[in-house]
Amino acid sequence: MKNIGPMKITSLGIQHVLAMYAGAVIVPLIVGGALGLTAEQLTYLVSIDIMMCGVATLLQLYRNKFMGIGLPVMLGCTFTAVAPMIAIGTEYGMNSIFGSIIASGLIVVLISKFFGKLVRFFPPVVTGSVVTIIGITLIPVAINNLAGGQGSADFGSLTNLALGFGTLLVIIVLYKFSTGFLRAISVLVGLIIGTVAAFLMGMVDTQNITDAAFFRVPTPFYFGMPTFEIAPIVTMTLVAIVSLVESTGTYFALADITGKKLKEEDLEKGYRAEGFASILGGLFNAFPYTTFSQNVGLLQMSGVKTKKVIYVAAGFLILFGLVPKIGAVTTVIPSAVIGGAMVAMFGMVISAGIKILSQVNLASQENMFIVAISVAIGLGVTVVPNLFAQLPGSITILTSNGIVAGSVTAIVLNIVFNMIGKKKEAEAIAPTAQRQAS
Image 1 (cartoon, rainbow, N blue to C red):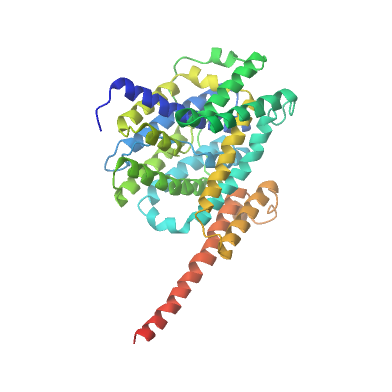
Image 2: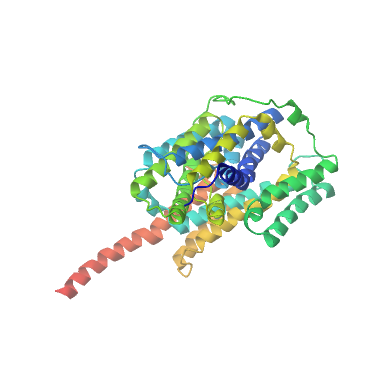
């Protein structure tokens, strides 16, 4: 590859930041909004998330003996973690979210060497079902925001609906008629246009931006010491494992683009970096971090595969995170505008689950059954959370959360239909083949 100048590297780095920025900031906005954080707390959550995206990216970029896959990859919080975090925060409190993130990150670090052996329990029929369940549970959050936010005085007003669906329409139009980079940042453009429209309608209060500091050093345990509960840890660990499966595909896609051959040791270091990034995220009251696939398309589109561009992007993220005023800008976006963007983004989570399921042989009645029952259980427990309330506490750990219940159902049914039966079949075939040979 020819040497490229610092100006081009910088501009490409900014493009990568813009491509993932909407995805990065909307997670803390949704989680913080759902848990009723103050404007000051929400500003911190957005700022620390932006900064930790940069730190997590550096952990993967810099390859050493312990971790780092060394590919031009960017990290951010996966949307599959949003619904679980809201559920954990609502039932157990904010500090339990961060405790479960730290614990799940530690588990990922510990299993990184053996994950290749565990991945057989998470084939596409399982991961596709899990991602689909998570996406479905997110849609009510999006619709409530689009209407103005649950409990708001103007819930469902024509103004909120116009802003929400208007933002969604902008995103749809950009997706239809634009290509390349503009299409990649269509959600960000939709948020900007929707917020400008709301500002002109007098619905944007900029006081939070005025009150925010110009510079702030992040502090560990901003929301207090983390707490560790079994059910939240199980939930976030399942989310982390699904993320690792998705990251593996992204690693190989990037390796193909850059012409690098990945070894088992490289994958272990990549998994370890993601686990360590999540531990840091929990310590600083941020989120679990995983590989962002949307930046892969931008890398392929630009044709520039050097890690220098991603180093620059990570630097910008860290810089933005240290300036609370930048984070405060995102907190003034009206709920209806966020809701419009959420419909598109969370709908894409469901699409991602369906895409994974498209790799599955659905002509097999067993696979159809696994998907049907796991999604039904996951959605059923989400809609009727008290379904298993009368069961002993040790059992409700796995049944009180729709995502956990659906995920465990998918794992168990896959073992029953696609692993145990095949093993017995293979054992039965072997002696027959030996007799025929003799």
